[in-house]
Image (cartoon, rainbow, N blue to C red; front, side):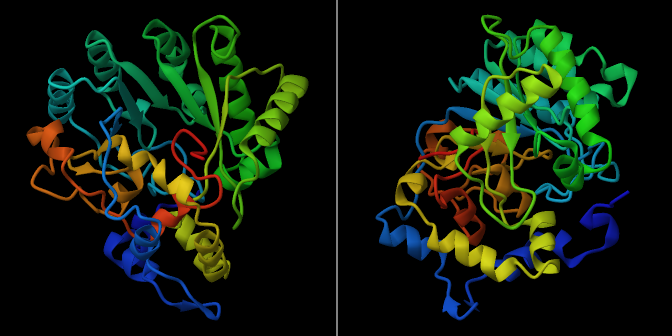
Length: 349
């Protein structure tokens, strides 16, 4: 079993150390400019937010898996978990705003003991809910076997990571047996209507590369995934989101250990796309940490880069004041602006 960086005492478990590693430097014979400089050249600095469309809530870092590229450094040994009191503060913030979508993430968000209560309360407010489900949690323990029915009952959109449509590449990134368990979970979701045409139950998959390279065309990958999963397993789904690996946490550790860090960063910088930069998810998302701290995105959250300005905790939520802030950026942001761009909803340009 792979342990989290925090459990092994790695320097990269420290967000401040990660930011030091990510600083602009003379790398691979070429100076890599700061992300802020690149955005300034594109006329996009400081980066200003739009009206928030998504409240993304990380309900805890506990997970039944320890994936090699996890930017959260989640795992069974992580004990950080959102309390019901903090969840209530999120509900209070939603009640005073018109944010239409709540995106629940982790870790495995379903492992939070108040997860189902939280979903029910969000639905009572009439908001659309996305759950970032790792699939294997559904079959990990019998107490989770009814999750597909629970998701259906509350109209939850399910977004699930599946590194590839075969076992070898999936298990290499996420652990032995993960592909087989993921297929079982996908079939359970399909059985209650998820991904089925006309059901109104959305099942989207997420692809991120298993190595030190950027994803190919999202449309092409989606065609390949749909063809292979239907042919080999009878599985259907709605969309595939192709996400570029962000160079933080365990993926940063992988890049350094494999000797790919310099080349990968250079690739991200040289692939900077102003159109993708204009559409980054941090402009329309407010991210809430397990402890209630506010961030511009899930990646900033993992680097302890809280939002700029006086409103930094969900208890003080004020949409108007948050709209006045500038988005906090750093070198890892190149991962969202390279090529076709990357976000929690796939490509952005």
